[in-house]
Amino acid sequence: MVDRMQAPRGMKDILPDGVEPHFDSGLWDRILAASARTLDGYGYRRVWLPKVEETNLFARGIGEETDIVGKEMFTFERSGDSLTLRPEGTAGAARAYVEHNLHKTAPVQRWWYFGPMFRAERPQADRYRQFYQVGAELFGVASPLADAELLSMAWRWCAALGIEVAVGINTVGDDESRQRYRETLRAHWRAHAGELCANCRRRAQTNPMRVLDCKEDACSAVLDRAPDILEVLSDNARAHFERVCSLLGELGVRFARDRRLVRGLDYYTGTVFEFVAGGLGAQNAILGGGRYDNLVAQLGGPSTAAIGFAAGVERIARVMSQQKVLPRGPDLYIIPMSGAHVAAFRLADELRDQGHWRVEVDVGDGRLKKQMRRADRLRARTALVVGEDELASKRGRLKDLGVSSEVDVELTGSALNRALEKLMGAK
Ligand code: HAM
Image (cartoon, rainbow, N blue to C red; front, top):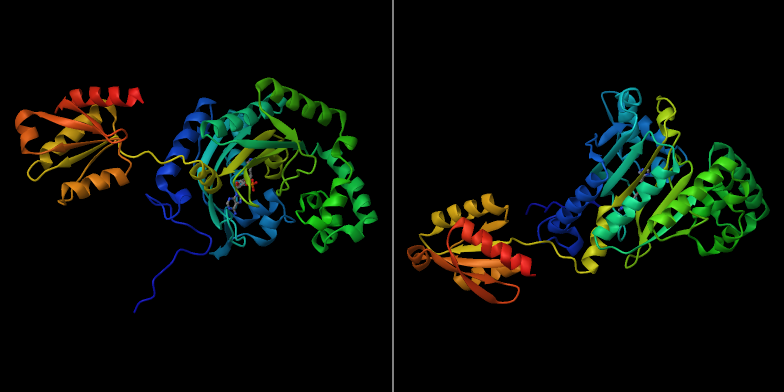
């Protein structure tokens, strides 16, 4: 017997009628369509970037000290080059911005992407080794207006997907404030070293801000008492953050300041944020992002302000499937009796041309009952049987599968188009 093959650990197939509801490709189509609509509506244009980059890009961009670069990269050698499957999309986007000299030709760029990211994490619920992100990056605008608009866009996108989120925001300050804050924190951690877990004790001196992100209960008391960055923020950084918060209020984005929010990537400067959804377990962050005003310069470009976010598609799909948001089935399922297939194909094509309807024609030769069951399973909105009688009279019965009623229709594309429009409009 030949061993059956399986997808690698932590990597999933996204199929029609997915193995689990949140791996259903129909649901993913809905997420992709809603993302394109919302982000396009704000002037973001879609980019496709390599899924593999030089390892150095991530080490320089995300930071050698981070878990992602230190422990989670899929890295390999090819012809003497060290390459890595991208663990996230921001470093590659900044690399492309610099490589194509966009700062000279069109410095303000609004980009979005949808694609797989790879992190060799220990797989667990809602944490995968290959996962998908929808991300948006805005280059070339330093104003707090950009922070507020991007956050409001992310908020409205979640609303368009029907997901309720709690928005946490913070600032990690400008370079000068961050430097001061690190020193303040180092002193605080030194004074309370005995109350920290081993991991935090190790990080307390090398990356003192990351300690704030520790989820261990043992550390929580000392973390809660840690100095707040607002105490050491420069006037500029403070004014920027206050303006972002007041703009968000005016735009109707509900948020809470989370003074322990620092994010797991080192490129952030200024505003940072995370969106959390109910219904998920420990891995409940569905979206994260912030300002990264130094990254373009770190990758060899001129000093360029930038801000962005990325959201995890698997987690969004799970929240949606829990809320019973279902993939959309065909608008019409045509069941041809023997000898009526070609007429059914023609009718389906006419209808697709007329109204961009999603029409599926049954090409099996099973019994009618079985074919109707298939229409139900696909969540088709309507069904139409086309047989000898229907072809002779040029009329058929359009069944509304949602409410089990039917209407008599002429079997032409335009008549069916009108009937479908009426039916869908009535819902
Ligand atoms: P991140 O917080 O590392 O940020 O990832 C963003 C989102 O991707 C998370 O909130 C989560 O929903 C999802 N995610 C991350 N890791 C996994 C995983 N192993 N399995 C499933 N989902 C996951 C970034 O990646 C930044 N590039 C965001 C950004 C864009 N900042 C500025 N621009």
